[in-house]
Image 1 (cartoon, rainbow, N blue to C red):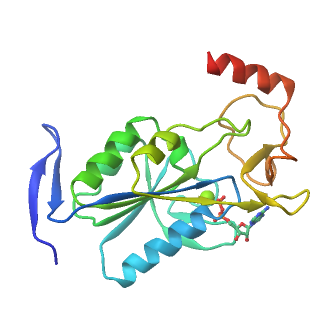
Image 2 (cartoon, helix red, strand yellow):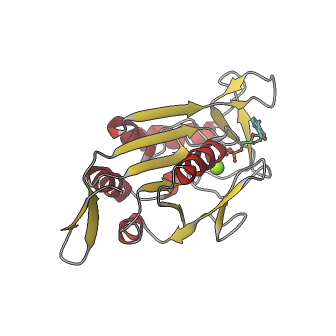
Image 3 (cartoon, protein in one colour):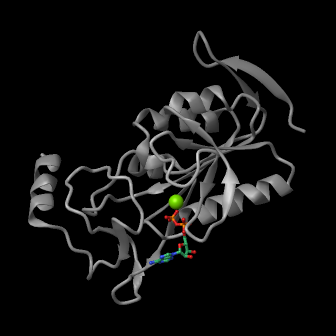
Length: 209
Ligand code: ADP
Ligand code: MG
């Protein structure tokens, strides 16, 4: 058991600080690359080590279940849906290991929340897409990569050629960055077989200005 003190993060919120150093781990890659599978594996090991764990996911993503994170090979682990990143801080008062899935769907304040949790002695494991369907960096993951102690890039298998794939092909006409979907809309592709429509490339240029 670690010694603990309570500190105030802001006027409303108290958080417990563990007297040991925390850290941030990021698991990122394309869809179907095994991010959720790897997050579940790490969380289960923390549980075996008798650490207090909690897993969160954003409200936007309840594709399979409201109460669990679920991987494409049907592994699952209980999770809480949160409306925004601040709610993770509020609900992690007594937690030693925090898992966050689908982190790309949070706003950029996730960065401060994750940083505060790690600063207060927690192990924070964040999983999410590092690139969108145009292979553009998908915030806030790139900034999380910069501040993380540990980074794992997971690779899927390209559905065209079988090569390692780090891109997500969108097979539906939509230029929104976020379009919730599964194999109905997306597949894993390698760099050679990843195709972005001219319209989406135009959006890239606008986004990059
Ligand atoms: P992610 O969270 O990165 O989307 P998951 O952890 O949910 O990935 O799922 C990984 C699993 O997806 C693999 O173990 C495999 O069973 C399945 N899968 C389906 N399509 C592919 C693919 N093209 N490449 C790799 N794994 C795939
Ligand atoms: Mg996943």
